[in-house]
Length: 157
Image 1 (cartoon, rainbow, N blue to C red):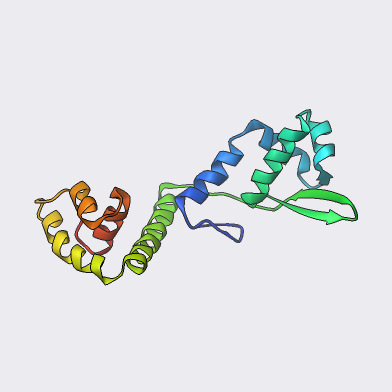
Image 2 (image 1 turned 45 degrees about the vertical axis):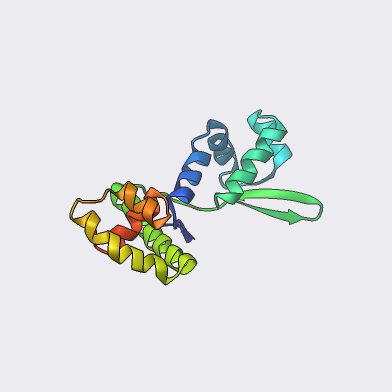
């Protein structure tokens, strides 16, 4: 999933962006910044939010890719990046699938072939209902989410 060129590659990233946008103060800053370039001080004055809060919001907004910061002389200015977010079950599912695939690759890279060997032993037991995913996770030495991703990626669930 992308947000006008930004790659949203994990559910954590998506949740962070949504968390930033869930604040009324952030939405006020967006409304004021729309089509303008302003300093944090000018934004604080116009919106009526303390400068410390404005700076905190702007930092989060920059990390989320919602605004960009740049310097002109001694001034630090902000402007809104054009963005559009479309959220649907399909979009969230797509992000989750990419995340699980990347997670599986990272686990195998980190733990080596031994985890693959264990997975080949444990996977059929999970598939037959003789072993729970929780037990498989413990036996593999990974979290439940990681075990689920490994088992699903390899066709055991």
